[in-house]
Length: 296
Image (cartoon, helix red, strand yellow):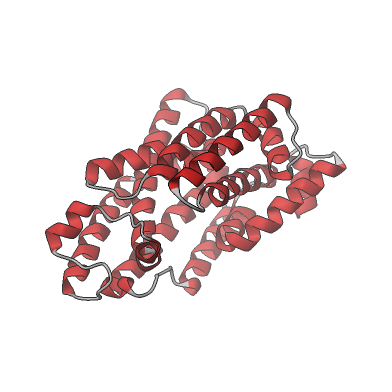
């Protein structure tokens, strides 16, 4: 199936096929569930380009997420130069950037979203604390949304009004996803010295993020409610894309609901361990959407 996907995506050069296959191996390792969803629910010709975008985003995060803020800023500046050169030349010494350059050539919208993502990374490497809801919304607008749009732009409708509605739906979805991310990873982030739960909400509930007590439980429930409201508002998102992409987008939204359910079940225990969606429930969701795709 992978060779067929490369053929349909127009990737015929032997070196570039090896490059895309290398990125596929990496994505399957660090994002197995997401890769499985894309493989069975998206048209074959889109799969290599989704893989390239996800691999680039992960590689960027890995490069700029280590060391002091100053170290991360230096790493980002170096990476920014390499990325822009690859897009300008259509080539690179790095396989991940060769794939990105080809994907951007096939899907020109990618180029603009790469630029927005790299600018958003400046905020990602610098932040230490998110003070309040407004600052969280700014973080999502400047970093999280551009990161999502690296792949989401590949699904974007051609009609201008539909594109606007799609982008707004993606914004709502990623706002929910980011809040869920911060809750799922709370214990690890606190140990790392940089968590994403709004400081004013923590103070309002009198919560100690290292203690699994009722105060933290109330904080988690409040944040989960806010994520749920955004997920509900994002429900129409699948209707804005072409029918061939709807199973994947429905599954993406559905997996966020499963993640949110797991966060609610974990409650104050998030102080000591991360949470995640039920694997059987996620597999059932994908199988249901796959059956619906075949049927339709």
